[in-house]
Image 1: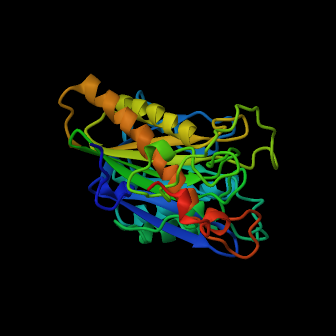
Image 2: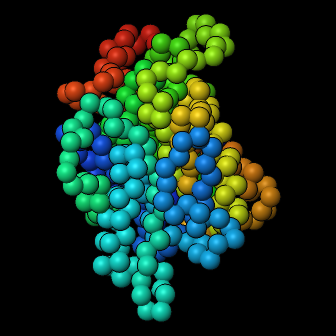
Length: 338
């Protein structure tokens, strides 16, 4: 029987911490995943409009195989500055890859587009470096979901997006997912309220809703809103001992969960990207089998995290889309699974 970790957060992977920082007026923010020591990381990109920093370094044939932190940020291209704030703070703390006595923190990052969400974007000094440093300083085992960190100003087709997380136990290993849901597609079936990820829900973690009486017929969606105003960025993590090639396969498999929870996904207008992180605490007993099962678990975990991010989003003044809670939380309890 599948079960979550005690927090049902990515920080159930021992040693990992997450920090959030956000600006309510800006309607944007930053989320940072870090640990006390470097960890193996990899990445796989499937969206057509990605925005990232230092992701080439994560290929299995590159010199550096471990990183000091991973950053998810709003702000489109301007949000890449969040990683600079994290890098500066880590270097001041003596962290980083040693190059002749100089410390160079390795901080890959990815951004989402949240520039049309009703927030005040008329700043003269880029705010994301400071938000990145603030998020790193706030890193903890526990953190809030929904309209926090990189999910602060996120949106989906009909509803607000948000920051989601979930965890899962698989064969003695722990898996976790962290995601900023800002998709062109929808996390809910038809007009809602049920989530596409409903078959994978554990313990009523996003409402325990009944599926719709009739599933919508397959359809080809039109392009809502502005092209490029999207992107779902995520991290899946495990305490398994994976090298970069194995971690890359974990990130590839996790994209299946993104496709199960968002319809459509991986479009030309989304920059969908998944990082993988491995702390190396537990060796693989049967590598091919363990890798396969961890990959499947990562997909389940990410699908659940996506639904949780949308489910926990909260409404704020000036929003261009309603939150799931504002739209559906008052519905009768008959919508829930008995």
